[in-house]
Length: 252
Image (tube, rainbow, N blue to C red):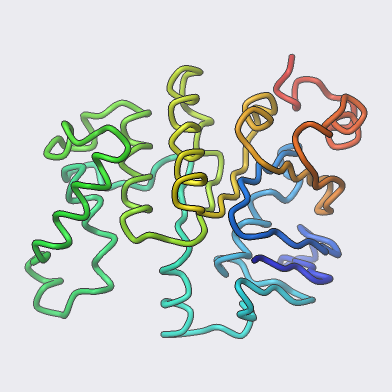
């Protein structure tokens, strides 16, 4: 469970990115986060794994007060939260398999880190993760030779190999063509359903978000203005979130 209570986020210089967030996200939800560019969507998800510190209020994840975490406790906490980015954050010069294996680096001793000595179990789990997103055939291909959709699947495999409880995805389909975007969204949905992973996904394509999510979260000017089932997202709701701008809604 993710619980926001009176949460604010103020950046140096006084810019208030989040304002008085009060929200509870239950385990196993697939949440599509929508809103205009600059509304605070990325800041919102980055507070959950403490990539960004909150300025006020309380944020708890599975009962843990995130703002109190540091050092070893924070690193252990983050092992249960996967993060997926729009631009993949892969190492181009190494293979898809080796990119997935990098998720095990925190588990290696100093000698293993220096020589890249991963265990057979780590290798097997990494291959299984690649297979689960249908890209096992590219395991030994350098990632700079892969398409955008293939890279995103490698990034997803790198995340799920650690069996996180929560996945945070920041515009993961923004740079993909429509067909590939649907494939990637289907993988997210399967993880959500089959492994009961909680998924929070920032998305500009509203129709895509409505088609796959179990909940929709609307953020406007750093505030939560909507959180409910996709079926309850009406044109009036979208107008409130996007200030009557159909282009920002991804519907134009």
